[in-house]
Length: 141
Image (cartoon, rainbow, N blue to C red; front, side, top):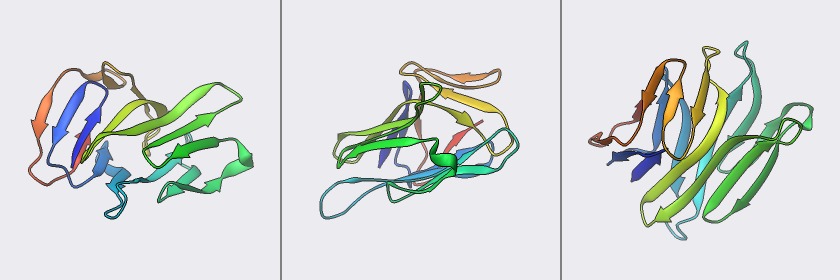
């Protein structure tokens, strides 16, 4: 599966996205329907889990602070009180998932931002790159 994070393309991934050395997001496509399945742990600045997705279902939603909208081909997780898009993903083509927008804390407490043009964690940035990860994970940070 190919995964786009902002304008960066990661080819031949296993669907895992590691952020600062920790697997934080896993994307997969359901074999029979091609539906997007996302596993994701959302942390606060202290490293505590505040929301968790399992197969695109919101399993933990601390204080009901988050809202999720999904279709078979897309997922949007937001924090309505602040207007923040936490996670926005969609299936762009068969075996291609695009992570087009997001803003959340890593397990280490840093803020990661994904825009259509780049991803950044503090001073680390990547824009417009293409990488063949040869069946491995997408590594950010």
